[in-house]
Image (tube, rainbow, N blue to C red; front, side):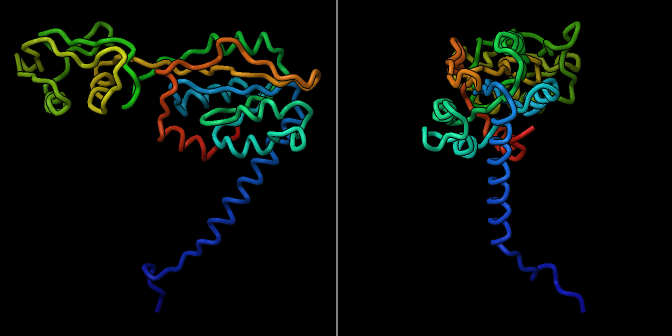
Amino acid sequence: MPKSKRSKLVSLTKVDKKTREHKNALLAEVQQNAEKWKYCWLFEVGAMRNSHLKTVRNLWKDSARIFFGRAAVMAKALGTTPAEEHRPGVHKLAQQIKGQVGLLFTDTEPQEVIEWFDDFRQPDFARSGNLASRTVILPAGPVMRVHSDPPEPFPHNEDPQLRKLGLTTTMNRGVPTLGAPHKICEKGKALTAEQAQLLKLIGEKMVVFRVALMARWDSATELVTQIEGGCLSAEEQVVDEEEAGEEDEEMSG
């Protein structure tokens, strides 16, 4: 008689062992890249989206190596003290590895790297917890999708969802219609899940994914240079736990 799947035993020690091996492999990989490339950049991400970071990885795959996620592993790999540092001078960069940050190893000259990331911007929809970058008010009348060209009203079958998200709509000739203006959000205030969903439905992109370069270590000079204007704004620093968790599972690329 076959064994019951319900009584199957799972060894927790195997899970722990795999985790340690994974961390050790990442640590070794960071060190190998520190030896290989001329520059190591520290960066943070505004409006983190895995899809956009993967785009960055793909665009740089032939000329750089990117790590993002486990700050403690990256800091340990580089060494946070002069005695522990893996390369001369790199401990000053490692001391800044805290929170949701990443490392970019490359031979590309600094000015080109700075200009490339300064130009790379990807608008996206805000998530719950993001701060509204502007006030959005829906006018009285048909509820419109602003992302369509030309804008078009919502179909009748989406009226229940609009009402569930807080809109007081009535049906007018089969179109969800507002009898009075409705403020979805106010600039500077954190978005609720309902507000974020409404903004997505109407097509209002309120955040911008970008990579902010914070500092650079140069293997030739053994110096760390801080990047002026590299810090994110308060709106950009809100961490999406779901996105961060997924990216942590595939830290290198």
